[in-house]
Amino acid sequence: MKAYQRFKRCIGKGNLWLYVVSLLNKKGPLHGYAIIQELRKLGFNISTVYGYVLLKRMVTDGVLVEVEEGGKKLYAASPQAQENFKKAIEELQDLIKALT
Image (cartoon, rainbow, N blue to C red; front, side):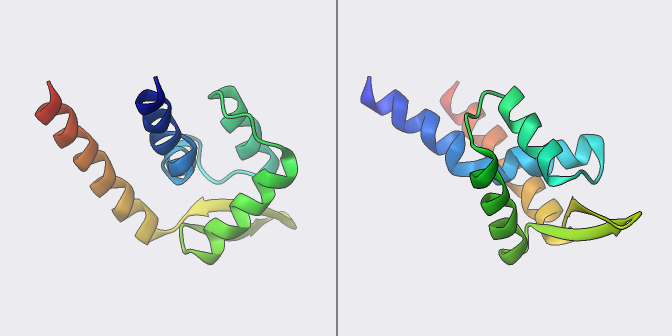
């Protein structure tokens, strides 16, 4: 059904930032490739190139910050992303309550 496919696309790939922030909340700052690998484990079929483009876009949008540790670049969720993540989770919970 097309409506369900649109739903999956919007809640999934259309909101990858939610998955990335959740992942970083659980595991702490990670290298870009580790984030890409974790997204693949969640079922997102993304290329390595797209993954890095996505991470750079998230930095530009203020979702992620780049931190350096031992001369290597790691990504962490920004304070604003943490706040927006909490709001998004609350809205999703409200939506589930309204639908059930």
